[in-house]
Amino acid sequence: MKTIITIQHPQSEQHINRQIGSWADWDLTPLGVTQAECIGKRLAEELSGCPCRIYSSDLRRARHTAEMVADCLRTTVTFTDVLREQYLGEAIGKSKEWARDHVQTLVWPQTIDRAASVDGRLFRGAESLRDVWNRLLPFYRQILESSEEYWILVSHAGTLGVFYAMWLGWNPEMLEKCALSGKSGGVSFLREDEAGHRMIERLNDMSYIL
Image (cartoon, rainbow, N blue to C red; front, side, top):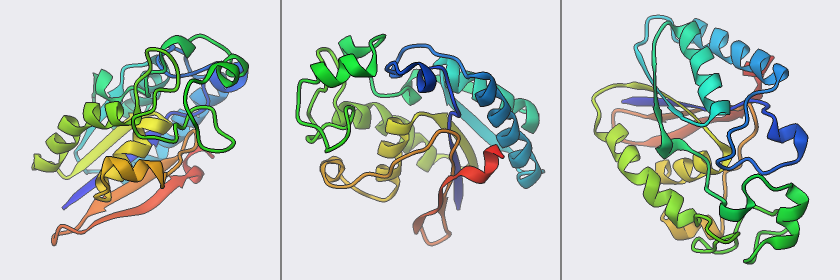
């Protein structure tokens, strides 16, 4: 049996300055700090007595979130670049308006950062969704092979969407047709039962930031 709790970092600076997140190292806003503290306190109540492994993206907005959650749980965090957001190449540091005008591949309607093809690269030098999949895969297998039951992952919308697809047994090509979207501050619960069935019991539970 395994329980994986994912946290999409709460409000950070790129959410209000209309710039691309990706690997730009934005921090949380004051509201985001409050939201992260709320998440940590709530999880500490729910997971009291449960030993948890916390892994986090090493980008500042996720790192700050994970540190606050870990303080509440009285544990430590392992930081890794594996859980970073999708790398968007030349768009990093640019505005969303710039990105909309310079996207280099077909995208899903009403988006600027969701390529229509799993191999599509949104901007020059960017990762494709398949690249993100391949980056995550060894880490995902590490979790499955581990004997530890409780894991907390602090990451970003696009990366967590790929992780959920893996959890449900999709292949990479399914990302061209289906997506599990994230929300800032959303907490999700993934479980595997004793028979090996995998479930997403809650997706983007926003009550944790209140």
